[in-house]
Image (tube, rainbow over all chains, first blue to last red; front, top):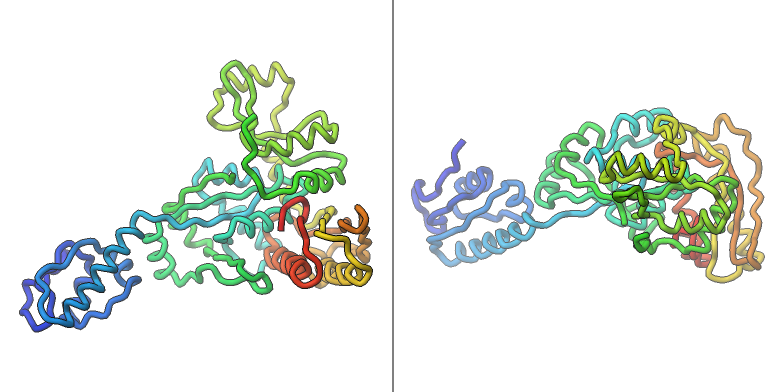
Length: 203
Length: 193
């Protein structure tokens, strides 16, 4: 599929003169709306577009274009940014995760099934201290070499898209623990998550 | 030895918690240098605690960067034995384990606060608190307030492994709430709150 160039369409007042290298979804949306674009940041990220807008005409279009350019500047920042999560586990499991650059889903599935876990999947959190406490309880005594925390870095733009497409509830508040949050990645999505994640040991 | 960059623990509190066990199972991370010299790259505090508590051995994970030949020299020189990884993994397969829980507070607890602490903690260790307690004969918690009331400690059957996320969450919620509404907790098992 090729990226449609809006300048090849009939011009209307308020339409964008030319769009280059913008994502397919975004370009199509702009084309359909003929300048009545009220895109938002997330949609732009979903489109994965990069590019610039030229040949703007019309007062309100210029305003819209500013929005687009501002969003694109944000996109540049997000494109290079990473989002950081932590996972509390055992030292042995943490070492294996880092060595394999993947979470061993089979083992977690088995353990959760045995315990009749209410929610299945791989838990992550954006707070280091939350991960440390979650690791300290089951492994504090020293089982499997004791507690450890894995740092997980994911490309922010790719992660936003992953969350959006899969309906993942991002960083839900943990009841009774103000300021502490968790994200549950379903087992079935862990291959995709592993592919984008970079795992390292903390500290 | 590299400096320990882990500032999450109160060293003396962690040491006290680990002193409750006759064996030290927590591990350290080492890298073996050319010539078979070991450098501790993580968990330096655990090695220090092991020495101070008089343990003769400590478990360690050898960094993958270490050359096999250097590891072999290290083993010959120190008499270190290889751990069986599959046996290690079995350690996380138990549903419950008899565990020590040690809390240090910012100030000594009053009698009323002690009662409240026992009540709150007991809720996490009653039969209905976890499916994992179904095959365990639970007894009421016996909480000792030590260090002139600055700490509380008890031994209890505890869900272990990663499976019982909801129990862990409820337990953390209880002690965080106690810390915020009754008396500030400085550390749990040495880990700062």
